[in-house]
Amino acid sequence: MVDGEAIENVTDHPAFAGVARSAARLFDAADDDPEMQHIDPRLGPDPVNRVYALPLTQEGLAGRRKSIAKWAELTHGFLGRTPDHVGGIFAAYDLGADVFARGGQGYADNVRRFRKRIANESLYLTYTIIPPQDDRSKIGNEHAEPKQVHVVEERDDGIVLRGAQMLGTSAAIADYVYMTCLLPLNPGDEDFAISCVVPCGAPGLRWYSRTPYAVGKPSVWDYPLSTRLDETDSLAVLDNVFVPWEDVFVYRDIDILRAQTSETEFRTYGNSQAQIRLAAKLKFLIGLAYRMVESNNVVHLPGVQEKLGEIAALAAMVEGMVHAAEANAIVIDGAYVPAARFIHAPMALQADTYPRVLNIIRDLAGAGMIQTPSSVHDFTSLETADDVARYYSGANSDAVDRVKLFKLAWDAIGSELAGRHHQYEIFYSGPPFAMKMLNAQKYGYEEATALVDGFLDTYDMDTTVMDR
Ligand SMILES: Cc1cc2nc3c(=O)[nH]c(=O)nc-3n(C[C@H](O)[C@H](O)[C@H](O)COP(=O)(O)OP(=O)(O)OC[C@H]3O[C@@H](n4cnc5c(N)ncnc54)[C@H](O)[C@@H]3O)c2cc1C
Image (cartoon, rainbow, N blue to C red):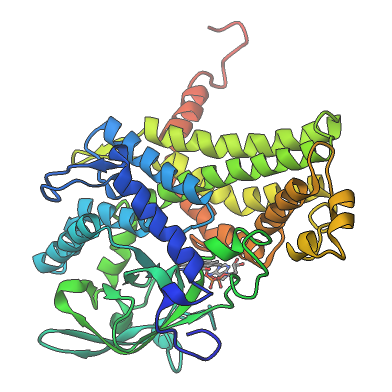
């Protein structure tokens, strides 16, 4: 739903046509790249995209990372919920299928069957795993009239859901939504304790898109990211949506609902994709910053070098963490899982890292992103073309190249799309305090506390400096 109207065909609508084509290019790139394909007998005889892999070797884990990175580089990290995100989570669910089997073997079979479908059909999944924001001090039945998605009917062939759930990034162009509740529920909230997938076009499912940023832009040249990479975010509203049993993974069980994320590699697999993507995005932003200061001929100035040095350090740290997580992978039931410590550390700092990078680039840009003509038409109008060509050139570039660069920078740093990305990088995986708490749980204090205990053991009340 956009501007009060249901959209019949998203691929033709100005809000979604650009991003739909960008997403299609990802699938084409994967099909054309033998290094992104592999055969996994557990999934079937045909090659499947490595972004969905559950690697059984260290090389396989590296192959997964390289494939995710290729996709991230094609969109410069500006599509957060590419199919490798939720697709990767289902690989983790396959590994942790025993958790779902606690409700009955059928639920584990459902998870594994659906994960095979994701890989073999290259499905595009989004997820809505948080109740809509209203009174955050309450959950489930603590609300007088709960809005959160819940079961309203159980049938022989499936269940019926009603309510709303936030916030389906890329839902407009996805095949399926994975719907569950990540927030802890109370006993008595069983109707909210569901985990399932629903086709994005299922009867009764309505998607309320936020304001689309691709609409009303003068040209791709003026807003190259907004017009082509606005994945949009939508509230899911379910009006008696039927879900067949084979698409249900957790049913009315609060403990299993919590365990599906806390006792599987849900976060490691999902967030490793997120950090591989962030590394690509930060690299792109540094490239932008460098080209801007080059255009202003200030690269060599010490103050500029200091700022470039800081954002380069932040980007290199995220990139380094991706590699550290891979190099220190642990093996669970034969599957290689990136080390949680090195995935969750950059996640915990991301609410500071990303705004810091944006802030430094704003600093480096000065008003350059604002001192741009109103649109591409100023270059072609006889009334304005001469002035624009003369007064908008850079230290080493003509006006077309300079304005093109600074307009891209504005779309990455300052436009409405950029503001949404600022918010996205802070919140996409939960509020910042929760990310820091997660890191506290995942760090693993054994080594650190052993160091302290070992040191404490080296002296007692009688020890002197002469003792060895
Ligand atoms: C651009 C964007 C895209 C998103 N895409 C998706 C998506 O694809 N799928 C999806 O499921 N979700 C998505 N989300 C939603 C995301 O999961 C939530 O933003 C996140 O879980 C936080 O929930 P909230 O936004 O309601 O913030 P809140 O949880 O309300 O937090 C806001 C602030 O309130 C305070 N606060 C709230 N509760 C507490 C508490 N218990 N203790 C301490 N402080 C508290 C904190 O200061 C916090 O920073 C997206 C969000 C954004 C911004």
